[in-house]
Each structure stands twice: as structure tokens, then as C-alpha cells.
Image 1 (cartoon, rainbow, N blue to C red):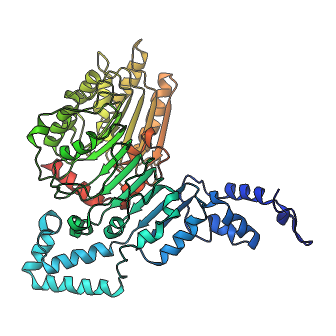
Image 2: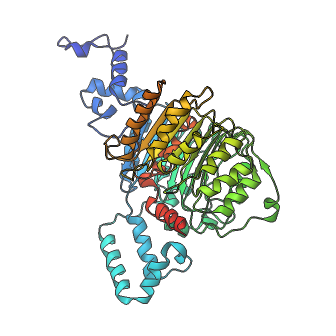
Image 3: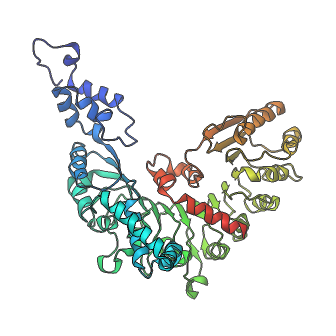
Length: 544
């Protein structure tokens, strides 16, 4: 054993061998699956401050430095040395690294400059109202100028374009296997050379500064190439506002990607969503899970693509987010075929679901998630699911669909006869189900039939702070289902879970077993996504 010779005045703890100390430190730290913050009050830094011996032990043991999460307002030069010191202590052990910036000041500066300067080409959709107002009102323009001057007074200088490269170059980048980047300035991403992360396995990249993406000269400076030539790279999650006209702003090795999450919302996309999907699916031979947000597009489908059929046999889980784009749903479901699809999640107008089912998406489905917002799912959809998805065992719906679902389940012949698990998503104190007697009748009658419904598991999700409170729908449903199962005399499993963040549209996808253990996906939602725009946009379209 190491550390066998000590001074004559040793305390008992000083006589503990170094290898035992290492294991004690590991068990005292947060789980290594999640990233640690560089704080002297927790984690490896905390134990390294106790004494010189403990500092030496911790600095030499790579397992204690395998994860790092930095969450700051801005990218600044001081982070370079801080990050490298931490990650170099991993001694080439696989590293999980998160780098998240939260300030919206750079975005606001660019936005004000655009309004004041009337920069053409950036007005459509994003800044139309503000730029038009500034051009018509001198008073408003002066207000923007004063606001810009006030922000610039305290705003930090833009980071050098090679700052991120200095942070991760060499052995540091080689040790990173899981990477989360959010709101990194585009020039810093583009400056990263190919094979910066040769051992990368999983990436979450969120670029939500719209003007940073649009005003960057992609033609001259080129796309992001840092994630090419990574043999073990298989998991990718993108949250972005931008898609290029002829090519994407980021180059990825699609031929080896197995899990791809591509989130919007996208503005002014020059390519049709089906063209984007074709670029991915035509080269992805290993893709198992695919999430796609349909773009706010001005592009059209080339006639050759519109008349073709692309079969992706490897995809088993498909998730689609549509903002009332029925023509895109119709074209997508007609062109792309997934013969081995087992899980399908859909967020958008419920009428579009029938398009996918009519085009043969249900033959092998075992799980379906229908997450329309404030829209009732008609009973006919459940009937179509029963007919087109005969193997369906798991169903997820929002609270609004609950009554029609149980009306369908209580029908003759029975709908969805193989259903085993029901997921229900609730949102706060919405009005309760008008006719709980219909649901009660299902339990009183169907469970007594020889070939009645077999499902015994109900999982309820709620974004409320206290979902178990009696005033909330979820709390009412939780106790209601427990009572119904008990009175029917059947074994059951009813659970209630709080979901963090308002209207977390990605949470159902994150529940996929294929994504368990993938840290950092939450950056795609909550603060990471423009939920205010997203839901106002969906609500507006649903009202039309």
C-alpha cells in the first residue's frame, strides 16, 4: 500500500492509505454520471482544500475530475485556465463537460443595432415589427439608441474567436466523451478544427442567438467541422434557429449517428423540412432514434424527392414537432417509410396524426405519444390507432384527451385491447373532466369482462409545483385512478411525477429508454428554448 511512512504525530485519518482515501472521496462526491460545478464548497475541489496530502491524492486521481459543468453569463478569457486545470487532472479518463452561457445581452445588442441601422435581410419575421417601428418613429429610434448605449456601458468585450479552442485543445479535447455547449459564440465554434474531440460519444449543442447565426458569414468562414472524424460519435442533440440554404451550418457524420434530436423553432428556412430529413435519412444507416421539428419554411420539395420513397429500416423511435404544418406532415409521411418503427411521438394539431397512420406508420408501433395542446383528441383517432397499430401497448395523451379515450376503451368491440401502460400529462388547475362517471363505468364494466382491457399501469405527469395538491388535476386523477383500480379488485400501479419547467415539450422524448443517462438534454428546453414564442405560435395557429 502507498503512504506507509508518516510523521510521529499522525492523527488516525492521516494513517489512512491513499488508495482507501481515493475510494472514500469517490463515495463522498456527487454521482459521476452528472457534471460537477467548479466550486470550493463541493466536489473534488472541496476535499482538495483540506490539507496538502489530500490535495495531492485528489489531483492524482482522474476519476474525481471526470465531469465539469460551467454555467456563466459570458464566455471570458479567465475560463480557459480554470477549465484546463480541472480537465487535465482527469489524466485522460473519459470526461463529461458542460459549458453553458446564460446572458441575453449579446443578442440584445445585435438586435438593437439591427433596429437602429435598418440592416436589410434580417427584418423578415424576427425583427419586422421593431425595425418598422424604428424607421417610422424618431422617438423610438432614440429610445433604442439610449438602451444600446446603456447596455454597452457594462457589457463585456466580445470573446476572441479562438477562446474555446484554447480551452479544449490537445489532451483536454481528447479526453472529452460527452459534451454540452449552449450559447457559444458562433466564431468560437467555427474556429474549432476537425477532430478536436476524437473520442466524443455524445453532443448537445444549443445555438439560440438568432442574429449571431444569421449575421455570421458562413460562405467565407465555412460550417462547424469540429465534430467530424470522431469514430465513437453516435448521439447528437441540436437546438437551433438556423438552417443553411444549400448546406447545414454544422457538419456531422450522419452515417454513424444512432440518435439524432434536431429541435427548432426555425425561422426563414430556405429548405423544406423533407429536404432536411432526406439529407439525414439517406445517409444514416445506423439511426435508431430521430426527432425533427418541422421548419417555418419558404422552400419547396424538389419534384424528384416528392415522387420518391425513402426507406429507413434502422429507425425504431420517431418524434415529430409540427407547428400546424399539415402539408409538411403529409409529404413527410408519404416520402419516408420506417418499417421497424416501434415508438412514435407527435406534438402538434391532432388532425395530422391520421396522415401518419394512413401511410402505414402503425404496423409495429408499441408506444404512441399524442401531445396536442388544448385540443381534444376525437374518439376516431383512438379507433384508427386500434386498427392501424394492433400491437400498441403504451399510450401517452394530455388531460384533454382523457374522456374520449375512456369512451373508446369502453366500446364494443374493445379499442386498443393490448394497452398496458397509460401516460397522462396534466397542466395545473385546468377544469376537471366533465364526466368522470364515464371513466368510472369503464372500471366497473370492462374489468369484469372475460376479454376486457388489460392495462394496469397509469403514470401521471404535471408541471405544477405541487402536483399532489387537491386543487390540481393530477392530484385528483391520482386518487381517482387508485380508487377505481381498488374497487375493480385488480393489481395496479399508479404514479404521479412532477416535471420541471413550464410546458416542457421535450420531456416525453427524454423518457425514451434509448435516452436514459444522457445528461444535458434539459438544455434543449426551459431556458434553452424560446418557449414563449413556441407556444404563442402554436396557440395562434390552433385558433385559425
